[in-house]
Image 1 (tube, rainbow, N blue to C red):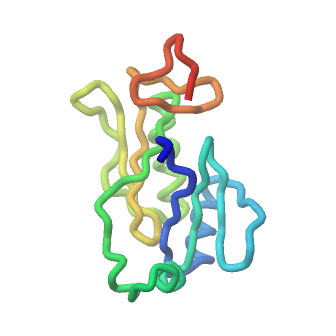
Image 2: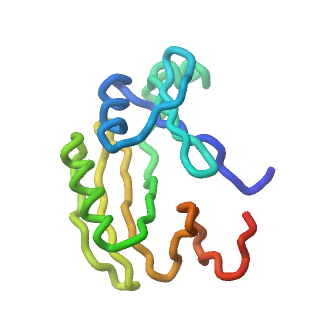
Length: 147
């Protein structure tokens, strides 16, 4: 298996509410078949899909999908952008879990939950600046532009 994630699919209870949230953040939808909403990202896509349909596709009861403890992270180009994105998410209906703040390792982060409870981390990491096109890599890019 090649080292990549192509599509992140979020199971949602209310497609219209979920799509309105991401639309309010300024994300642009792609053309998709009925019953799914997709936003193209840098190198992958984020999909919204009804929870009951995702469970059916897997042959599970929706209650078996559980609540995975994970975050979706969006790194920013500046400390100020963390607060801007957090405020936009709150205006769009997010529940702010932790306001923007400096962290021990030298970065600046905030956490919010979208209307379905998916947790987002918004982070500025001065040790891993984004590439000009917005791409992120844990150790930064330096002279190595591969990946």
